[in-house]
Length: 347
Ligand SMILES: CC(C)(COP(=O)(O)OP(=O)(O)OC[C@H]1O[C@@H](n2cnc3c(N)ncnc32)[C@H](O)[C@@H]1OP(=O)(O)O)[C@@H](O)C(=O)NCCC(=O)NCCS
Image 1 (cartoon, protein in one colour):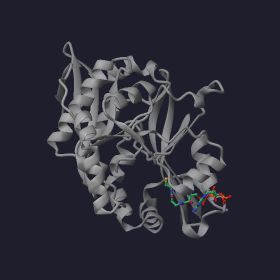
Image 2 (cartoon, protein in one colour):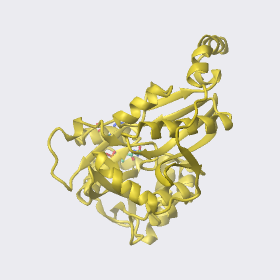
Image 3 (tube, helix red, strand yellow):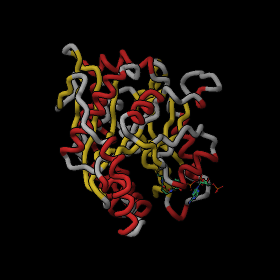
């Protein structure tokens, strides 16, 4: 019978070994490079003790549940929650109930347990354990060039034909529009972004607290990726932001909108941020822009700005323990704000 307790400093090598066996060498190496930042430097983890549960059998480590603590805001009321990030059980010990034991231990210890971008096995286990399934988080793509519509599994001729036929649409949705407010690139989030979050938090039925400490940790200090950060300004105040990056994919370049925040009622602000991202994407020579959004008002504006909804694989489960909620809570997700930047999806 396995025992489950918290991670200790001298578990490091055994956990790294298990990670290599379960996820492979490349994933293990990239996890190793992120580890200190991800588990010790998270500002929602003030004691710097990683929020990781370990399953032990005698001296052996047979499983872990690593999590990312966040403050979860429910219409402005906050609970201490966490994203389940790297969960694993030794291959020879899988499907014997250990995963469920780890999931339950984590859940008992947090005010909200959240999962994003799940593997088939963990998604099935969440379902088996009846976690509310509130995903997937919708995915949107805006084509900027003809190459945007290519599919890796189509033959070249078909890709060329689709490109030619869709060119007029691409030209219309991709046209440049004037920006309605000031946008400025920034290097860090200052305290005004904490004030902005506090002002906007009541507008979101569920969202992770996006204060300056969290945003700097997540998007300025991340060791594995470099982001561009644009601040939306009006009357000399920061009233929104967008975090994005551009990179090549097998069939063309993409600009990924990783996170953003603006008052969902500030239509012109959101349009301005999207217009800015269009320009940046064109400058980066991207063929398309990809964004994830859940809030109905953001979704509507994305669609009006030339984004098309495509199939999303970003599964999402959420369970709130810290506050009594009415039974319909998990069915009304149109005021939830979840993006790709949540959890540790952009790795
Ligand atoms: C996810 C994981 C930790 C679950 O641990 P576990 O000890 O196997 O889970 P349990 O024995 O408690 O629960 C088994 C249930 O999990 C789900 N499950 C586990 N492995 C599965 C698989 N390969 N395919 C589909 N469902 C699976 C099923 O619901 C299963 O129930 P069943 O056996 O009645 O069909 C483990 O499968 C694992 O390490 N997977 C590889 C790493 C991974 O994908 N991590 C998640 C990253 S998001």
